[in-house]
Length: 368
Ligand SMILES: *Cc1c(COP(=O)(O)O)cnc(C)c1O
Image (cartoon, rainbow, N blue to C red):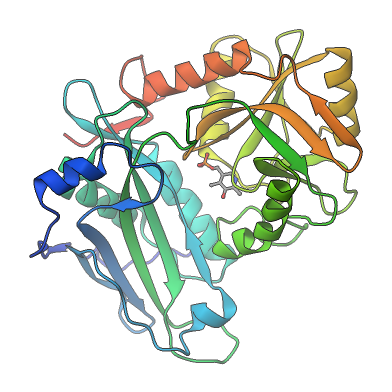
């Protein structure tokens, strides 16, 4: 059942920051922004109360917020988020990539976390208006973009265990360069044996902060084992490859076909994942959504049947997986570098996102 607010969409008030970052200081920050460290001058805010529904929508100066120590989110983690990018196109315009898909997924997450849905148009408007306000914050560097982080949390000051009656929805924007320091080299991943990310009936397909909190220890273990990222197996059989902490995964075979794990409820339905499936099929590549076991992965890598593997998500786009390590030892995929098909998917997706290629599915939403 969808529970969409029928209240009239509030219009956004605009309070311009009285203390924006000065132009030369901003330019300095945009030289090498990294990921998620450089923030813009404004943010979008919309409030929700049971009595008033969604109201008080505004674009306002980015600033700390004050919350009561009993605020529900601090105790019971009722919080969801999204991540999407705005791109500056070659003709100077700006565009969002599939924001409607993020708006829909946000509401799927809201339902799972017993939160009110945000009318899609409000989600879209909050993103569009923030990008329009922050046009000067696009880094003019390779891989540069404005990363938007919409999120919503339980803001009621109450320690009772129940869905909150009040919520705060916000969007902040971060000027980003390439996700990986030092460029898109192949990453090594650690197969988590002791920890799982999501169980059937749990919150694995919702984009909620709690999933990340539960994955951090496994990620730390991966680092301790000398790997870059963790990959999780399913919680029931501890056998089927699900995804990384924050990226979906694809396998490429010597017959030119690809496999990605199916969305059975414990995997986050990535928009990059969906885009790659469609791009690949448009190119005549066979993509199967089917279970793939860790033992099979090791065997196929050894026999050469598996030639490439890559992870994908909005932040890092497409990242080749060069090596896999676990309690049963290590194995290398292909030559341990960036495979041909991996590169082809990255190039094809990036070209659409930056308006340099045809956009047959209408994914790019121009703002100006
Ligand atoms: C956000 C996310 C992804 C990737 O989703 P995109 O829409 O492609 O950015 C994959 N896995 C997890 C756990 C995520 O939170």
